[in-house]
Length: 443
Image 1 (cartoon, rainbow, N blue to C red):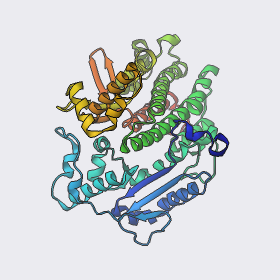
Image 2: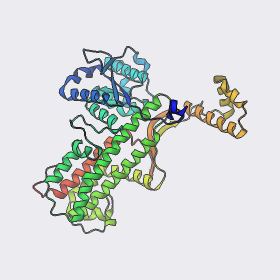
Image 3: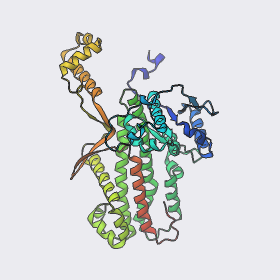
Image 4: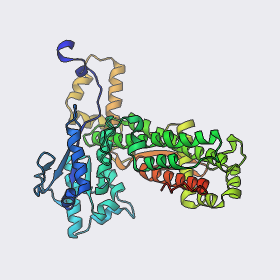
């Protein structure tokens, strides 16, 4: 039997999918013919030619003469009231989608179709949908701005170890991909090759090289894998399951541990570059002695680090890093609240299950031992309760600090956190090396 059928049908392994579906807002269709977007379409064709292929299907409501293999016309015409957002709080941007304006009706219809088709993303340039993109994630609607379509396609490829880029025509292997093809990383590496670094000690040069050639590419790869496993997990959720949490959690923790390491490594580099004279243990992005020494040499950099938006963000990164390194590892999960149904007693739920599923009674009369039956009942009741709870948000982690505890969605905010980190990197590099003529702003 194993020779004929193979081993895989007998395993419970679920592999990341290689087929992705994107719903294209009709207002974007005429923009897909531009030169930049045509490179993305060519990229999608190339991925289809792989063996095994990575298949990205583009769904549209109107064909408009676009190529048939890439675009599929969706026949469903769902009413706008088919979409109703989950629990709305005050200030929720999804409220803008609920009015009776023609644009809001059209956007609700798109959301309804995205849910009905269980697509991996809705590509749009609609201002209302873009403003609500993070809130819509609670409804498992992944809003993809048109200018991020290339990134979406690249994430699908990188998750399957295909390191191609829309902007880089050559096929690259993983070791050099981010150094050569990522828009920010390759500029930093070019600056390294052109910059004068005589003021640095040998250890300082090694710190800078490691920061640019190793840590930053590792962070970029971890970010791509978080985005990839979010696609996989969201797709699993849309089909009533909850797979790929392990991969998502692993790469998420790796990202934030590497991110905090970057902040500390920048402080070590500043110690060498500015001759602060600190012991290595005194260096750290929020260490008092480091900030005091920085004030004497680069007061503007210290002022920048103490700006509320930067200082508060560093605090959040510290909370995540501390939990990942020393406490309960942050695991993204749904945030739910109980309802009247989920509060029902075990006996009430078992009676409901007996009416909904006749096989329950057959199982309870089976020859399975009492311990096995008790486990099955508890598991079934727990699943039913969970299905009745109201979902508030997804991909949330629980963090705490001296002021208390809070919830945050690092999966949704990972690009914001990468942008903040890159801005702090730029501030350090400019302040440390601004006296060198060879330095060109790495921004």
